[in-house]
Figure (tube, rainbow, N blue to C red):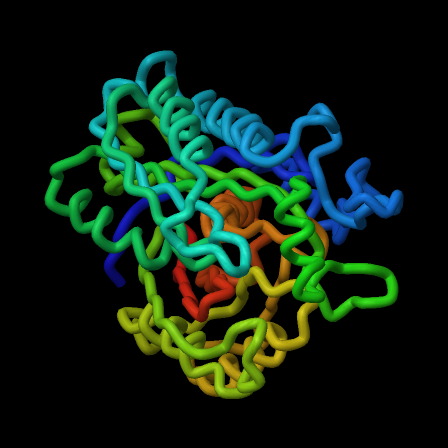
Length: 347
């Protein structure tokens, strides 16, 4: 089984934890971070969502996303000796949220892109940053080319990350306008949330050079685009998600099967129907018992941060030995039909 990259360090800021370990451990207990938030849509009723209660409640949108990202980057940097990461030749793959419904994909916030780039360069120095605005599944589309550059030794490491926040009047209003905002009387909907997650990847030999213990190995990546969207009625088709599963697992030896999964499906019925249809289609990839977990059901929607978050969580699960299986599947889906999957293994 070929290792595409080794997970060296991670940084997470979520509504449930101030770092990777706290988020992973609290998710493991089943604790949820969902409640009434001090933000409304003008009707005087607080929105039910998951949010970081340590942040200023008056900071919203892009400014809030930057604060989340800086906190996650600071945790990642603490894993290294002072100045060590700045000496690495680093390529960055940054997943950003999809535009709100009705907006074109090119309409990625210039403020968020610029300020995130500044925050990353404060830690890693001058580095090339590739931005993908495809939301939850974006990392699966952008990562293979960056890992090819890593394999050719043109860079020492690849930093992957994503940031998402629904703590924003415009984002909440967009969900509400299409009937997807969670309310007590409407549970087939999106629970708003927020998160920032970053993971540093390298070749296996880099961990020894930096004095780090590898957290996990990435052994496969898959992506496919289909017609299953919030407006479609064909969720039981699930061909794109199943294709992403198969592509990510194509190099797994026959004797190794996937025993657990982390997915970004929340409470929306179409995503859950699609998931179980895809698992049925790709049944030969999995072993029994097979465990599936959805952090979004306790953290709210994590959007573009989903796949980086899942890589970080899998590293913590392997490090602290509570992963249900040595082979895990991480998957996410964007609203416009993209589906991405990553297969990880214990290091």
